[in-house]
Image 1 (tube, rainbow, N blue to C red):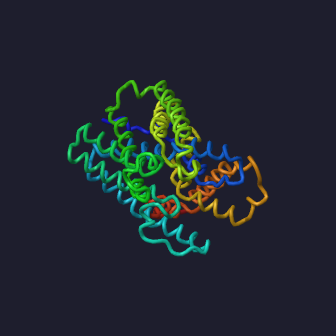
Image 2: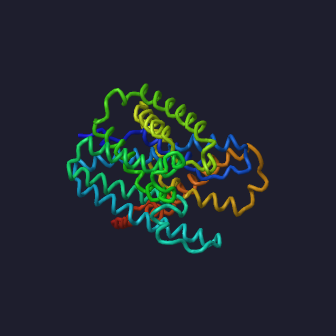
Image 3: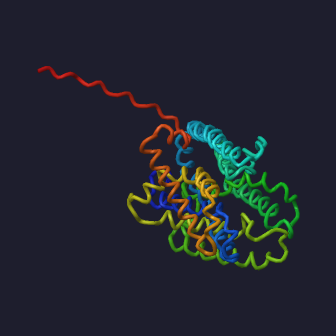
Length: 341
């Protein structure tokens, strides 16, 4: 039995919080305080890796029960979700009077934020293959190091270690789910050392990850050929994301309204919040907002997208299920017996 077979309210709460921080990554702070904008984005970089860790944590439980069934169920959800979400954002693209995007953009992430889904698909398939091949910890660790090294050296560290061309970053990023899903799988199967599974260890990793990011920014700030604001992955993000996940895993709480919202709506918020960003942008509201008040914008978008998710779930449940990659049949109405007088 794996740890991930039981639902964890702390993880569901973490998913809700993660969806808010993903919005922070996608909101433009170009009219806010420059240092504040950089700090906001750097503080939110843990969100996507944590979603990958959570996915690996739950996937490994199903994988150990029935590998083929686990793969099939994930493919049944991810493949339609990739198609549906891209069709929706294709409409947004047309409304913005942008040209049709190339097919590669669907998979490699040049188009909005949907690279996450294709990366998740790659992660599921690779972890399934590693499980089938009975790969040991050394093989898994080697895969993690190679992918993380490739992403870092084609991204933030390319100017220092130009081993691979910077133009290849978008392709290496598509494999970013694999190392973080393997971290999640290790926690789900108790392969991770016990000393790293406690709340204290989680807090140490969070603090260490924040400090390491600060050191990296200080060291890289003059050598970067692009803005610090655009950095997507630093080494410090790795311990930070793992620490936040460990902290969430150790939260001793029962199901509550926030964890329920995270369980039901975090994926919807993650995928469809750019629609709210698009609406707010077209409404010209941002032209009347200046300065640091812009920092409340992610929270407003989060609440509006959450409200939209609740409305769809309550009144258009089949459409809501479809938007989340689930195909649900309408339940037939039960025939009522006539009562004879």
